[in-house]
Length: 416
Image (tube, rainbow, N blue to C red; front, side):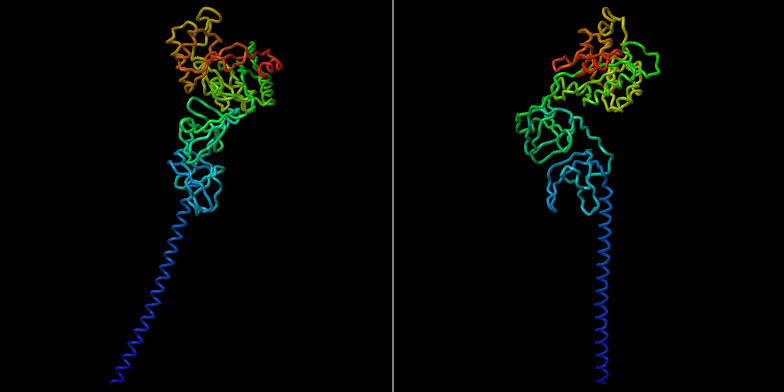
């Protein structure tokens, strides 16, 4: 009986040992499986995070909220400033999307992927590269905000120094991150005059064309009709001699001495609208900027769409002679001022509130100038056959009228 109890005890012990061993291996298998599941979950989360980061990447991205920007040193990112909502950035090529930070091309900083989404390319205005910088440099305070016009773009947590490219009453404009930014004078610590022998324009020729006709157009025979071949010869001269063709806004900045323009600068203008569409292929071929003073009641602005052609006012429907005494009788010289102002404001409404105006028939008096000013124009163009200078009144800017009989040699003399 005693022997039987021992056998039972041994069997129980063996069973318990086997159960323990089985439990141990079962637990171990459970732990291994749990680690596999955890690793699989982590891998899925990593893949999902990487795919999310990847979905925010493109060659160009738009900043979706005001966001910090970071400078990378080794594997560490330190905050260097802020970029504001709406800015479009060009990114460096990214192949490994394990990091949440995208490096911004050429700018030396990175931004979190959570702050951006794919966007179309932003065209950067680089016309300022043609300007002649002022002989002065500015140094900012340790914190400075960069503006594009009136919009905040960046705030930087460090001082910057740069040469002044443009200036106005409350701001300096400098090149940073490959474009022109405005810095308020309140953010400036120091302004230093520097030695600079650069030359810049003191006078700007403003040329005036009228009707540009094709070679088989026999309906244009007046002295202010221009064959395309004549325009082409002028544009060839401008291109070969590296002229900078300016806009009316740049003309205003020149007159206000906010910018310095290169000596070879010119403003090309066309009057009225008749046959003016014929100049557009030449403007685009030679990449020349021009301004069309359009009579908005007579011609549709949609006929003159080109990135190289600016539209400005030549009245709405007051371009007719014989209305007032003297000269050709421009109506601006004697009509009731309220009627003139209403017409000019209507023209501005058609032309996206342009601030540039050309007097019809080149005629003006104090009455006309007052009406033009009251209608909201900053610039007024007349005749005169001479160049504009910084001393020219902004509402009486002289132009050089080009005729069909103007030779290339005469044209060269006018603009040189």
